[in-house]
Length: 271
Image (tube, rainbow, N blue to C red; front, side, top):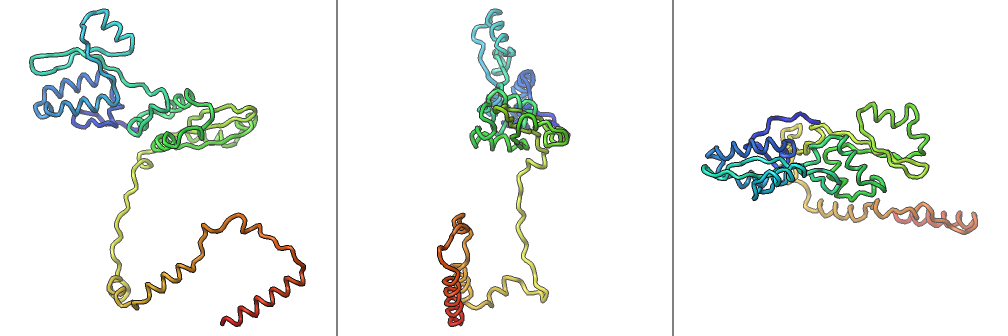
């Protein structure tokens, strides 16, 4: 996993909240309630916490109630409501068990091994059976590659499987009869997950010191029109279909030669 910096109440976000645990929530909540600067923003703090944690108010403070909450995986503690009052609450980290639990906020805070567990728990049809939205979420934080091979060839020495394992990938194998689909998973580096920011191009000067913008003003007025006409006649790759390569003609070689001569004569007359 990526290196984590210390998280405080002031730096807490809906993304890094997935890196803290229940005891951290109680500690931060207490710090927020004592900081006059943060008191007015306590609601924002709670909203962020709720994205990654379940919070239940303990309305009946009895040992039997606390025990049942703890059996369900909750941590119970007291938090300050105001300077005079405290309230017991139960807090539990939301589990990421299914692919539908994955979000852009939490996917970068689980390991490749954990992701393989989640995929294994939900799979059946392979990588392509996942909705595109889930694939996009996963690929925002992980490098994914797949291969489907006969089961007896997948682990061939020196093959793709060995190379991926050597590169530090986790793998999920999905049997498909006598074939096996292998899904290789590796966490992206922070550099890979950074958004690409394009820098604006600065205006360049020609060899004689003239700005390109000034030179454009000297172009003939009808040049743009000529460009449009050229573009209309431009070849459109999208219009090229597979059928273009399969066109056949049923005729004799003599007829083809005669037609070729006619085309040649017509072409010369155009010039």
